[in-house]
Length: 282
Ligand SMILES: [Zn+2]
Image 1: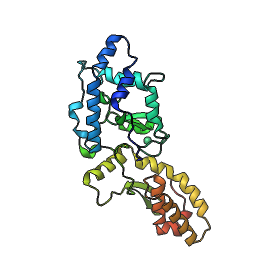
Image 2: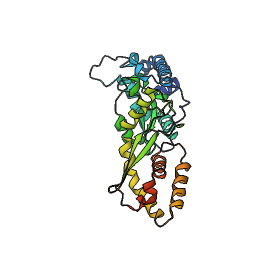
Image 3: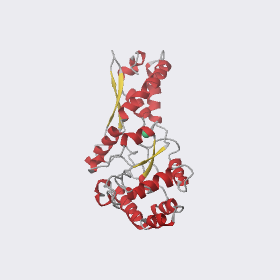
Image 4: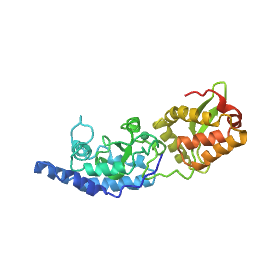
């Protein structure tokens, strides 16, 4: 997970922009009446997100009730996102583009995919008041966006990491484990900091599971190792060790699959001795 700065844009301004061209006047007036509720909901959301308590916002669920039992969320508000913010050419689209641009193309949820969608951290179908709240709108790759779907956390432990509110970069929690020959392989897992509170450990594991990061990262390893093994071939033990330690250190404590992979390789004697000569699963 890659942290991103919380958007400077506030929810009231975003909402006011999105509804500014609503027609006819009756629709606009109806939407305008929700502005205070939208702003209050966003303030509650930000407070809860900062306290890692996004499971406590039951009072915002399915609000305001528009009386349509078959609707997904409040149609005025979910429609506000779909038609007035996400739709190309709409009045709110520059805001959408601005939120997306902050990721600079890299999905902050997996740290690997191309971020070309916006994910509602709390789904708009359940929390329509947060449909256009910038702090609830996170750039994501399509795979991560789909993986999360319309799921909302029912407990503190079920909250995935939030790029605007959570920063776990001070600890290398992503780790890789090598399987020794005859069928060498690499798998990824969460290595929590021993001092982390249990909730944070559970959340990081939830994040790892939700976005299927183990599978995603394992799928990248084959190409990387093929090139590396080729490069190491014929080099003396000390040179190989130096190279691996240098690569591991150059990634610092980052939680990228490359950093985890090189940390694992550099600390696995059999890989340095002869493991790089094997055919690796990819
Ligand atoms: Zn992603």
